[in-house]
Image (tube, rainbow, N blue to C red; front, top):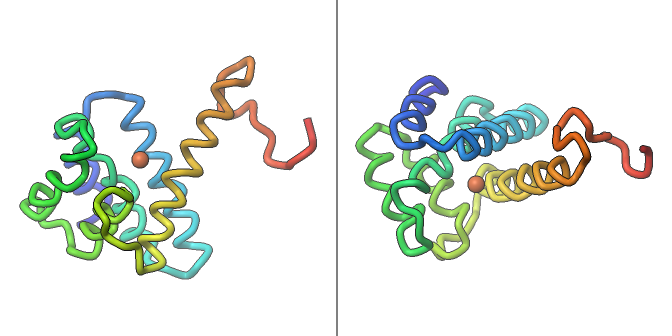
Length: 136
Ligand SMILES: [Fe+2]
């Protein structure tokens, strides 16, 4: 399972461009932290890219992401990544135990925050954000 395989799954199940952008953002953040921590960048990136793949077909807390689990398995996604996808949602009750699982949860949250901050800027664009706190 590489990035191209994961992107094919995303393109099969997701049509909303904003949801795709969100998953690409989480992929990028996961890639950054894998590199920073000396972990498997491709594996972490795939987990980030796939984490919300079933949201459009399973748009309820009862279904997402649990009902997507067998779909990922059918596509040959490794169990380690499937578990990370399941554990990113608190309501599954699956504890986050590995560094990748904890990173996926954190990257999901931080990319959402960054997007929200960008949307309240006049330009509504990421390029308008400053990377240093307290400097405008
Ligand atoms: Fe997400």
